[in-house]
Image (cartoon, rainbow, N blue to C red):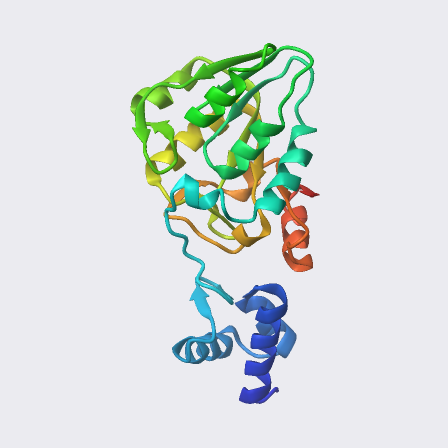
Length: 254
């Protein structure tokens, strides 16, 4: 059996390398009980060396805050550009797609230059204004209450639009991807709208830079098994990539 100091070193080294860990994995590797590892994590959290979550731990605070779109657009600019370029390749001839709200999906919208007819349904005011300038883009702007932080619409009226339509793909930006809690957003109303978008789509595509993995927003959108594709950047750790792919999600690293 490993000593307390050895266990603590292994835990902190793993977090430094991977950004997160699961209690069961550490217990199996070190041949100790899960209760022992939980006590270790409690001690290390009290020392402010990590953050505990249910069944796991992370190197940084996993809970996200609701930032303004203008603030989000200043973060991970190069990563979002690469993600957007890779995601645009998923749009097909004469496609009908849904685009959510956020800086990552707006970066995707900036890449769109359709040679053939493209139908876009979106909650984002910025996406609508941008794509409305394209001759081959048929833009459907959802109605509803404007959420100032994201410059998008939300509410029951917005969601009801999806009662009678279906699209080939939905592209969503998210605030968190947690292997246990799933895909999340920091705003509950926006996450509820995202659920309706997923229900109305044949394929769900998540655009998220690598900093979103291991994070949790306030509102749960869906479980990971409802996601078809995640497009991210090369900052994703090998262990996280392995977990994502083991679920059956296609992972595209831009």
